[in-house]
Image (cartoon, rainbow, N blue to C red):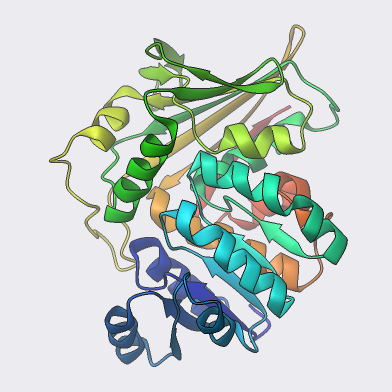
Length: 342
């Protein structure tokens, strides 16, 4: 159970934000609802009986009021290119930990670039991409490394049954494309590289029951930021099943539809992580249901560990750097099935 502390959720009324609010309550925390849309906040507050504090990223004083007296803040409001820096600044002023669920590669790069030194000097905790994309892959890669201090390659393959994007996902994707233009990004030879050619289509041998699937190679996700931020791996590559990649770009793909009492969609996922060093290979896998819903236990478990002192680092740190990765993943057993092959 949570320690009964208040945790602000910025973007609480969004699709992922609602999952996070519910998970916080289930874990014994008291969520404080915040975000830019006062009407949506009022409706959610009426529905949940929780405190609502409207705030705008353009109004630092409103953010300060939203974070007054809380123990931590979770930013669920995209596009994160607009919200990350203002909410981090407010968290630093309040002296509280900051976590977000950003899958935007550029926003995560900005967090490490702009706040690493300040957060380290202040002894503050800032955890970007504490979500399905960025956080889970990083934890799996860290667990797969085991006692290795370096590896040659990390491959993170996403097997999604489908990908029905939320409005927030579409908006964040549009912002990323606007910032990146026609270029795509990959992490190779120890650095980020922009490419203008089309990514390759490959076959990835997922374990049964999924089996071999066509994937888009170099379908770059936030893991290319989180993994090399603390692991000595010069090549980090991510892959996405072709069907899910088609879903995310098709304009007529529907938004997620709830199919159970927890509000989860029928979507299933399998994340298959392989790290290689010379001829040796290690593997970590996790499978479960609904990439948006599983983000909630990921980020709430992170809050719980930060507030109870179960961390390895301060400053800007990814999930694998700040937490005991195998132990963290095992704590998610109600939500994911984990396999480690070391």
